[in-house]
Image: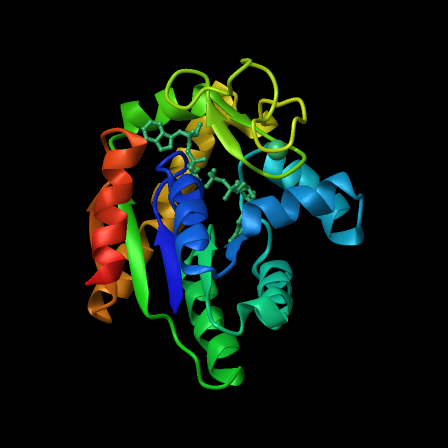
Length: 215
Ligand code: ADP
Ligand code: ADP
Ligand code: ZN
C-alpha cells in the first residue's frame, strides 16, 4: 500500500501519517524529517538544505528524488509506505511514478488530501513543538506534552522549528499555493485523490482518514 498525504503546512499530515503507520505497520516517510536529520548531522545534503528550509522554500527536486528513492528501496518499505511531504510539485509527482515503476512496478494507491482553512493552519503551526529525538509532533494546546517541555515518547526536550515562526509560515503557505496545490488537480485527474476534512480535533480527523483508507 503506497499512500501519499497532501495538504498545506500544518494540515496534520505528520500526525495522521504516524497513526496510519502504527496501524498498518508500514513506514512513514517524511521528507521534512529526513532533511532535518541531514541538517542536524551536517551531511552534504544537510548543509545545502539548511538555509532553504529556514526560509520556507523547497529543496531541489534532484536531492529529494535521491532521498526518496533510497528510502523506498529499504527493506521495511517492501510492503509499502506512507509519504508525508513528498511529492510537493508536479515534477516530483512524475519522478515518484518513475521511482515506483522502477521498483517492481509499484504505484501510488491513494492520495489523502487534508483540507484545512488558512487561519486554522497558522494557529496549529505557531504552537507546534517538535521532538528532535524521535520526530514526534506536539501542540501546546491541542496535543500538549504531559510536562509541557519534554517528548512523551522519548524524553527529549521539545523545540520550536525555525520555519514555524510567523513570517516564515506565511512564505511556506505561499510556496504551498504556488507549487504544491496544483497536485490536487494532478491526482484528481488520475482518480487517486481523496478529499478529507482536516478540521476538528485529531481523533475526529483520524476517524475520517482511517475510514478513507479502509474503503
Ligand atoms: P510541513 O510541516 O510544512 O509539512 P515539512 O516538515 O514537510 O513541513 O518540510 C519542511 C521543509 O523541508 C520544507 O519547507 C522544505 O524546505 C523541505 N522539504 C520537505 N519536503 C520537501 C519536498 N518534497 N521538496 C522540497 N523541499 C522539501
Ligand atoms: P503537517 O505535517 O501537515 O505540517 P502536523 O501533523 O505537524 O502537520 O500538525 C501541525 C500541528 O498541529 C502540530 O502541532 C499538531 O500537533 C497539531 N495538529 C495536528 N492535527 C490537529 C488537529 N486535528 N487539531 C488540532 N491540532 C492538530
Ligand atoms: Zn521524542
